[in-house]
Image (cartoon, rainbow, N blue to C red; front, side, top):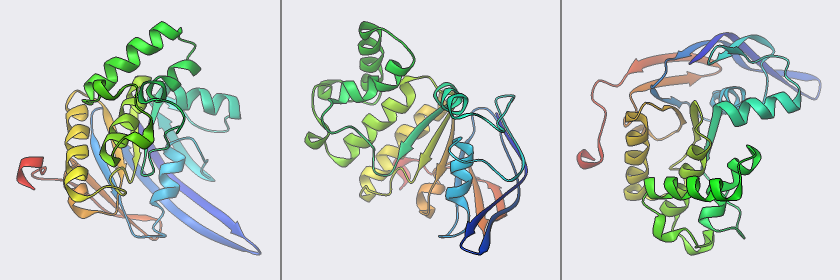
Length: 233
């Protein structure tokens, strides 16, 4: 599903150049649940931005579902993001004046679906995350865990090939974090490919594979021998 080879990325800071990714080789098969870990400055956010087609590498190749991601116009990059990717953020990124239903339906608007189609599909995903009864509520009427479930439903609504989650439990308490991770595990069990950036070791251990970055290189890539489930934490 994802194939990255010899990925390099540098940023210019004044007269200096900061080499952030230093030859990353990384692949993800369809249906994997992978966490990407690393301290601040390790390169994990830069890698996620490249995976999310929000930034582009200086060197190397990125293949997403058989499609080379290279030298894209803004229009084509946006098209590929909408076609291939769903995003889940630490801060939820919900639109405050729109209901939970309208927030979930928003990606479908950009896909050109009719209002009735958008509402039907959005409601089905709210049901999937256990929030059908909250469809008409605004984000400020929801708890943190509910907001993240709405965000997950929104990410799923466009039926992406890959879900990219950036610190999805970072703003949640421990119990709610585990509940959100259980939902992510269930979505993965249905065959969805999911990548999670996290700095929390217990959250990483609830995925099936951990990739650890340090100073722009992968220092560890291991399969989790026994994935932690909610009832065991």
